[in-house]
Image (cartoon, helix red, strand yellow):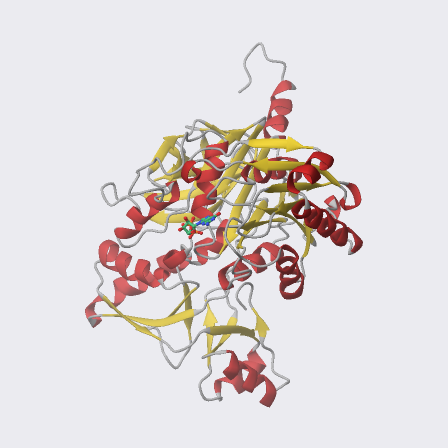
Length: 539
Ligand code: GDP
């Protein structure tokens, strides 16, 4: 804040400095690739925690920080989205969690609207897996640069370059390793740092610590020393580096920021090998927060007055308090707890007395936040994903798009006398973005179709119907798994097809639902002139 003795121009300068040192990212991965382990390893390197696995040590080294969320999940209806903030060197790093496993939902995708970069975490033995592919599509669609981490190099897996080929072939992203592993998968000795035109500039040798619980000691060697130490194993890595250069796979800042190429780091989150290199890469290459365009296309810079976008709302996370938390990502200006901001969608003031950072069970009061930071707001009843908060200068950001649903069900009230509350609740949950609501004349309004990215969204709906509206509901899963956007003319023809149903989503988009990709392919072949466009993610 401006104090009487502070020259006014130091405030924007300080704000600009805070923006420049921030890196906000999410990890995109498939369950079991090692996201929790990596999160913990990053926290260990940033000295947030002193020992991995120490948080609530069960047998051996397992339960990680992010597993705190399991506890929330056990309560039935929570979807923990969390942000871990830590200082690393001169930087402030925000790691925004992408819920996965059984809590994979539309929120998982929405997280990617709140970050400036993504770390794509791949299991070295398994390569690209379905959930990673879906999240990658969303990241690409939003133009977020992606850093690739190939994890579990301490275990037998594929050849290093084979994995890279898979990335090129399946998603058309060009991997440009910054480091190559020295030692095959399962015999991870260290990393070769690639310099100009693939020349090896350094060998970073790692030493295992007991159970990987502490930072793995690193020693740095020149390429000549590396050759003496490691012999053929080093020669192989050096040759691979040259091969990559010959194929043009060297880091290029512009292409990376445009989402065409992806720097690659080989790592073992469990042994803490390569983890420092991941942090250094985030600091050096990931972009700091940038401004955004509002609904009218006018830019708001990061040093303009405060504004933020809500990217997730979590109801009933803490059953003891029955609170509702809205998570905002600061877009511009400085946030101070207690400031009164305006909720753009209603024009009403919103008091920010209770501002938190939330990571697992840990809640810490936030007093100040800057662009790139994530803050949880308590009692945020009017706030929904995509909503804008601002101070001083009015702004409203474009809504968050709906993502491709893959699960469908009809919902109806158990008894007809609850119909009115049922309608009200459906509209409310729809506007909060808890689930997408689809309607057509045939099915009528008494049993709308709910569409979700993950089935847990249905559980949230039925639980909230009961707890907040006292409506007992009945949910019937529908045998569809695929939605395509269509237009009014095509809709008429599609509605005549067996096994296809057409609905209008609340945002007016016409969706045709199909049982599986074969059914879709069949209809496309039979009726090639119909409009059937993939939706974002998982399409
Ligand atoms: P998440 O589902 O992506 O959060 O994955 P976890 O972090 O829970 O890891 C899944 C499993 O893989 C656990 O048993 C981890 O101990 C193991 N794991 C994670 N990273 C590594 C690694 O670098 N090497 C090996 N060998 N195992 C790992």
